[in-house]
Figure: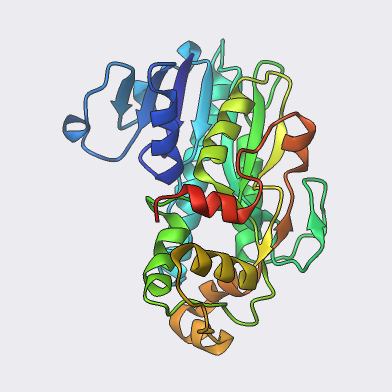
Length: 296
């Protein structure tokens, strides 16, 4: 297939390109200097969508976006987080709409933050009692912009992604130093649920959606078994053979991170109902197996 990928140098995007090596002809939209990027026969790098002919694409994978938890949420940072998702998604939908023979599929990023903070209730894609906060606002508009590309010629799949577990970056990489020194432990009361997915399952789910022409709409990109922050801390500490006795109080997290602490103190117990119903098989359905597979 001929595929356009945005966010191709990020955690998920880079793993996806590696998985697809030799299978597809891929164009990667990037802000990096093209001349400095590694040359590969099946990958073309571009800096602008003006360099892309959407009539010659079979699919678009939209993974672009400023990391949401990298910096304190100042007003300026919030705007960067939003614009980095909304602007490119709006452009992609406009280009797809304008094409006479548009790509058959747009797979576009979102996050479990779409549901806002939740308790212990199981959350499927049908859930509608969203908690109104920043994470929901980001994802709701992000998804609405992607859905503008939906037509009889183009199906749209939305990836409501959880915490992606990888040894090469993402949230887990930020946790590891403290846990390696035996200083890890629960955040707040530890009762908040963490919906996670192994990087390999994340990549294979995207490939599954690409190869399934009848699938469309939202998909919770999470493993079937979410865990509490307390359980996650215990499992990670056990994997590293370290204790996990330190608790980070909620007030300390708020002092350090401000409003962004809400991402750490609240969560969602999300289940991948749509993916399971469609026949997708998770390689890593439980957390200990997922952590054991990673080179930590």
